[in-house]
Picture (cartoon, rainbow, N blue to C red):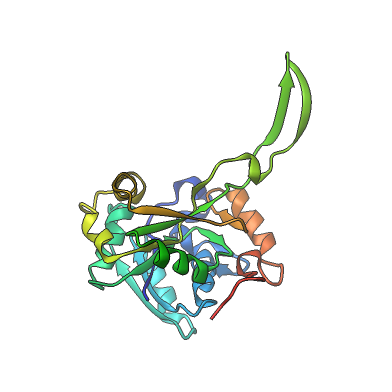
Length: 239
């Protein structure tokens, strides 16, 4: 099964790191973020990748050429201005009739891919996304009549669920994406939801994006842990 990694965006919110490389090539613990994302799938035996490139895609192409891994990787130039939905569409057109996995190149989590695929296969809908709790970014403040009653760290459980990537798409999803200008998040996903064809796989474990320099530094520290939190699949069944 092909795994599509979205790796074509500009990464403007972490511009300190992305002036000379695309966001998924930002180093975490000595390896590009992209390597960490791909490793999650590889640990589950999924090693056949399409990397959907755009901004400074040549950096990714050169890295792929020198990568010493038993992975099958094709860096697909999906265009500088192409949106996330358009990138998925272009990659899916290269494997017509096939179910694919897909995710973003800037977020990691110890997703149980086997359970995700089992969940998707059982519900019979066209698409599944992985729902996650966003990491706490702000202190939690409880007030009463202007007086602070409680101040402390906000937990992930205080927040709602968000789209964490790690999608499963049936072939029809590619056909439903209108064109290269369509974002995944405001185009085909809401359309699938309206059709009753989008399901959410709830992930309660580790998940973290790399949207800011602070998050990059936090991931750097976490990468020193063995196993890394996004590769800690204790209790998960891995083929």
